[in-house]
Length: 224
Image (cartoon, rainbow, N blue to C red; front, side, top):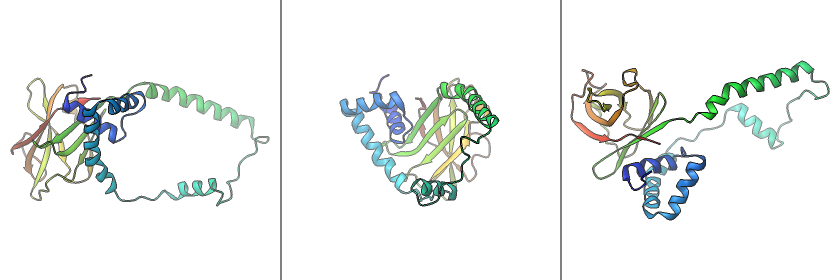
């Protein structure tokens, strides 16, 4: 893999900083961070962009049942009554074993099969990130950065540009702040992607199904 391609390196760095890179891939990338100045600088750049987004998220409290489990582990609450092993019916143990075996059989293909991910960074000509786009299977996650200019009378619309020259396919409206999740459209299934594009449209998006406003940004989508 050519790590010196800046757009690919940006995508890998974003995936690393957001915690999406796991296992051996993360270990290899950490080795590159320690040995390659360009990789180290790129990761630092995206940490400065993305860490403030995490800090701005509202605090959340654990659900009541989760909090009770924590308290029991700490000894603050009496443990729940459990069935003694000596009086547990044989059929209950057998049913538990059968359930575990069934779970292993059903989940093994999901655990073994790698999940295909694609990412794109929509940025200005000055390399200021505006949106982070990530796709896993049929789900598209769209995250706005603080650099997005709010538009009260218009929307930013995301398009997929097919590699075979077909007309653009709408992927939905981009959030002007925060995050949104949309489904990958049926019209885009099985089509090779040349690039993504962002147009400036009336509120609610293009009325024609095709870009009507100016195309402001384009970005390559990269498989990771």
